[in-house]
Image: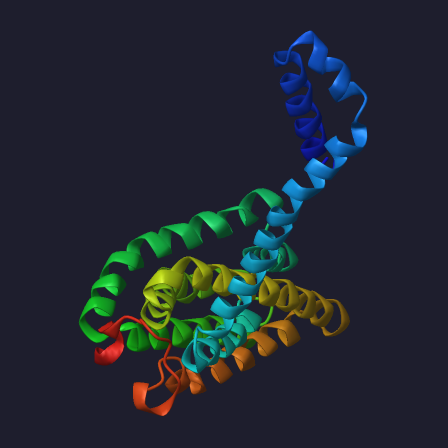
Length: 261
């Protein structure tokens, strides 16, 4: 499709040009396909050069984010490896005795707790900064994992863990996004969000693969233990989430709003 459409457009444009010319010139156009090909090649050359320049500029922008931004991404990757998918929580509910209909309440309950926690935790972020609220979210995630780990096959332990998981979901997105805004240069925030969500997606794929493999090989408790360990590691790495400006390489043009954190 990509190869066909530009050629189709060029052919259409050439046909339209030929149609607008006098009848005498039509024979000239028809008799010189080599000149048409040469003209198309000359027109394509600046396009290729422009595309190469855009790629070089993109790589330059990626490098120019600064060491603080990529240090933050390492902590985000640790967090992603400890994050439990809602699908695994539903599977755990079915495993401990709930039916498929009741297990769908997992997502509904998680959304309700997140709804109740989001506003007050957002106020907490405004008052104390993203480092504090991110720490609260990670502590809640560790607590939720420990509830699942220590309760065994108790049916209502899954729903009890949602109280902590919902707090974690309500507080974690805002601080992370504000950190990205604070560390990225103003003119590269879109690129920074693209890198951030790419890392989040890759770690989600890896985390779910590891959780599923541990669950299948050793049982659910091993998966929840792994999640708790990774979340605790993220909590310990929290001082590097928002590094001091004088201790790292700040990206030029980054917002100064991180001073309070």
